[in-house]
Image 1 (cartoon, helix red, strand yellow):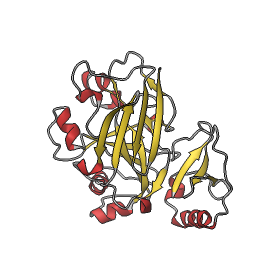
Image 2: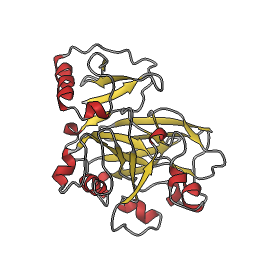
Image 3: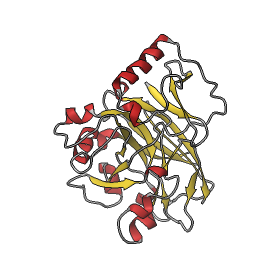
Length: 285
């Protein structure tokens, strides 16, 4: 299934995109697309049955904003330097273990919402990423099979980053990762049954129409199953939590001087095979 949330910020309603591309209203069945739904197999089965029976009312998508596909997110866990190509382009050694950091849940916005360049920023960067959406509470998982069984689905994420704040201003990466609007997510949560191999997905990103990133999840240093299993050793993952799994080569930081960092007025577009497409116009904060 392709689950999504539509409507004004803070007032999104649950919806489903059917196999014919028609937007369907889920409001009569569920309150929201959130951890409560994703952790409830029987309710998800009812949604599937209703979608298959063709009884869900259609929504007019004209002019309708698409919000983040998951509401009430508990936490956003991120994996840094997780593609061989990206580690090489920034001159970093291949990590021996996943590099883990957190983004605040309030950085998450809709896939086509405005991204704000922070005040004083000169190094705002782009990162297309595969996001894992957790569907079952995960603690101390032992095997890859067990890890994948705890995944509700996948989504497209844009892990926007301010490199000066992240690297040159002291401390950890938090300052460069948690600026407002720095995690567009969606348009859809695609359930795991429709993504048979998360290591077989192409990722692409354009800036002002120019292709900047053209990668593939097969280049991940730590694949999806290993990431979920590893993170579950250090924190409890709950339904509705998000894990951003890193970005392929092609970021501004990895390019020759003068590095083409983002500015107000730029347009970023990104996509992952089967997971939809995003478009953001950048403005000053």
